[in-house]
Amino acid sequence: MPYKFLHMHAPQHRDSTLLTEGSPKKVITAFAFPIFLSQLFQQLYNTADAWIVSTYLGDEAFAAVTSSGSLIFLMISFFVGASMGAGVVISRYFGAGNRERMSKAVHSSVAVSLLCGLFLTGMGVLLAPRIPVWMQLDPAVQPYAIPYLRCYFMGSVALVMYNTFKGIMNAVGDSKRPLYFLIVSSVTNVFLDWLFLGPMGLDIRWAAIATALSQALSALLCLRQLAKKDTVYALQWSKLRIDGWSLREILRYGLPTGVQNSVIGLANVMVQSNINTFGKVGTAACGAYSRIEGFAFLPITSFSMALTTFIGQNLGAKLHDRAKQGARFGILSGVLLAESVGLLFWFFAKPLISLFIDDPESIAIGVRQAHVETLFYCLLAFSHLVAGICRGAGKAFVPMFIMLAVWCVFRIAYITVAMQIDHNIVLLFCAYPLTWFISSVIYLIYYLKSDWVHGFDKQKQLV
Image (cartoon, rainbow, N blue to C red; front, side, top):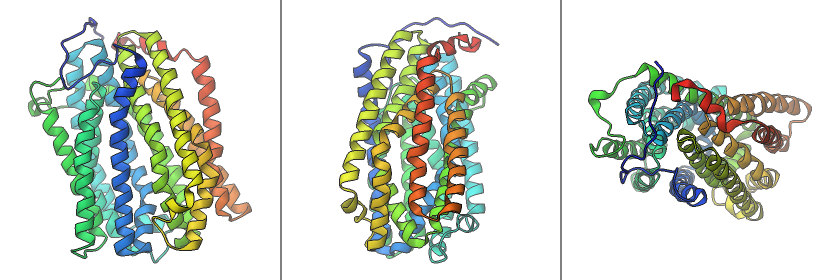
């Protein structure tokens, strides 16, 4: 039933930070920087993982790992996106000073995530033998992809739970501890990759096992922090249950984000399937490019997550003008940083791509992809940043519909038609900047014309 709350500045814990106080520029930057570093370490260990696989197991194994990325993203993105809904709800309750509702949301999100992780594990292991066939992987690559996928999905529970735990801590303004835990996890993963594939001479399954073990470590470290009694989240096993009200709120904001991530993942799988038709040369080239491209997402992801929490806390505290001010700063910063990374990638594409593959034809394809896409990272950043603002403002359905229409339906339609006209891999690369441009125009119109700041106030359950 509807309830009322009193906004008050509760005593602050060392594990939380109110983003409703101080200069918006400073608090957003201070909150985004640890997220940036955590994403950087994650990207570095993903890159190191791919490099170690390529070095010890060859190009076919490397193609199997990199080509599996889009499918793995599709499988886990819904659950990771849904967990963002919990972060939005928790940040709103935290900003509003409603600790009772916040606690119920925390425990409900953990319970739901545990069930989702178990479901994802079962589905991933069951479908692993069929996935490479569906994605039209080169026959030489499939024997590597199947065992890798099966072992990777066996660690799904740890992956889902880590993202949930990290989202809870971020929601209350704690972005430093997830960074520390991820650093430990990243170092562990790289060491285990080297140990299993190098000195021990094991096969590709152990690359996935190393990833699963490192994810489990980061999840356990987060759980240890969340379970401390003196923390603002104070996770207790005796309270671990699904609260109906909290579940509805989490689904209200998380379901659209989960669907959004899934449709993006579906489009990426379609693109990857078409890339695979160009053989292991095209697959390896695009896989190498994707590893470098991940670094362009660092400022985008960090500022998008920071804006979601910042907007959530400030609208929960009814600080509308402050929310607008922070949104403008976050968009400008994220766009400029992403474009700077894109320019560096454009100029140094060949030596960067060559870090992962040796074949001249594959390197040339990877460089071509970089020259088609990297100058438009500013558009990619703008779309993601406004989407993060929308989620924090309780408008999660807006980015879902935009991504579904543009990044999924239009992108797939374009690729289908383009490949029928001319089976040219460059036409595939053009799909990305084209759809980034269209979504950015739509987001700009919505951002300027819509009264997104006040949308959350109209929902009685949080007023």
